Image (cartoon, rainbow, N blue to C red):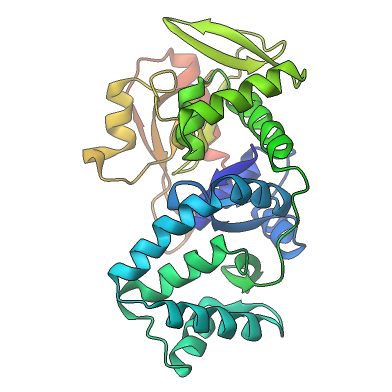
Length: 320
């Protein structure tokens, strides 16, 4: 996947679990963060993503300078001056030198140094310094909240080759996908992204062109068209829909209206049948989650046998 949108932390933990080996639990996913195998940080499009540290470094090499300029404008709008940002970086490096810290502790350290974190200043300072490679979210404390970690990010010896490899893997995980959607996902201009994809294909990285309706797209070499995958449940804010600008292959307009009601930016969990969203599902919050009755909104017509499999999948959902 290379990276998965992680603005909603509980959702992305579930999204990783359902894509991992059978039997993978949320505790297993948290353990990967605790071991430093996964991190969460601001990356493309000013959004938090989860990635392996090496991949995050590649993404930052490609997008970090551009995103840092954008983030600095957000800081300036909030009255953060250059001197305050530099002091914030020094305080952060010193604070994290002794080990991971909760986000509130980091904000308190800034306040103690005379750096205001009110009005979103703390959030944007963290994002700014994340693009500088000084901080990221890593291990968990008490199984729920992520701690901030410091230290230098991995070096990227050949940024162009590393980006080509990352984009090839991104396409293989999401294909069919066209170059414009890849550029949107990366938050980069279309021309360099197309050039990177062409280089990746020329190097035999396992990509091949296909025609999907009236669009040219890319898939992993040998991908079987129309392969049945059955009923799959994905959590809210999932890459299955957030990984594309053009979501017409993933869901109909009617299903999208149910997934993002009122276009309010909240992406509900989806029911997939052979890779296409047919509706939404959720398990309401309750005093006892084990007793909470699932809620299904199936928008597309599905055969009775498929509906039975959907009901069973929701009842057996292991990642509550």
